[in-house]
Amino acid sequence: MSARSEPASPAAASSADRAYTPRRAARVLLVDAAGRVLLFEGFDPARPGHRYWFTPGGGLDPAESPAAGAARELAEETGLRLDPTELGEPVWCDTTEFTFDGTWYRQEQDFFLFRVQSWQVDTTGFNDVEQRSIADHRWWLPAELAVSGERFYPPELPVLLTRLGQSTGAGQGEASC
Image 1 (cartoon, rainbow, N blue to C red):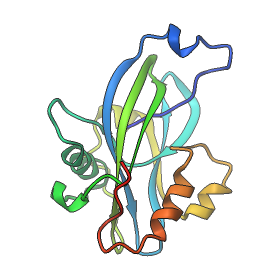
Image 2 (image 1 turned 45 degrees about the vertical axis):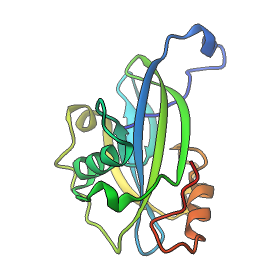
Image 3 (image 1 turned 120 degrees about the horizontal axis):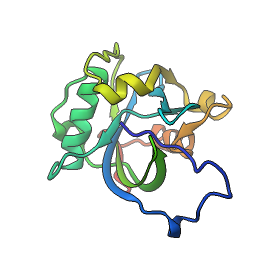
Image 4 (image 1 turned 30 degrees about the vertical axis):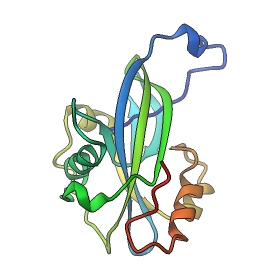
């Protein structure tokens, strides 16, 4: 799980003053036949009122490849089981800095695109942290998400999904990392 959130205020210490915990993660843009992406609504246990939507995925285990981690996280968080090779190459990569439960992270993450006709989400595989910090899930159209007024991560998500939806590649997505 990735619980991305923003610094509490502009007056917060500059990033040079913070000690970050480095983290590698893999995330999945799970898109259904209607072009909707699956997002989870979560919150930081240290700030329960700070709600946001985010993609399935999370931190990699030691020596785990991004595709293997993305497949593992997808199975745990949605019940959808894939061979990591089915995810193809990452379609987008970024680095983000966030706080979660009082710890600052600098996370390098790869995003994979996987299209399904439809999927009934099964969250019974949530770990303890996910059970305590994820409130809901929903399928969103990119345009709907862009005008929702909701906080979501990554902030570029509607533009990224629109670009990927216009891709004519036969695979799951075009690699851009």
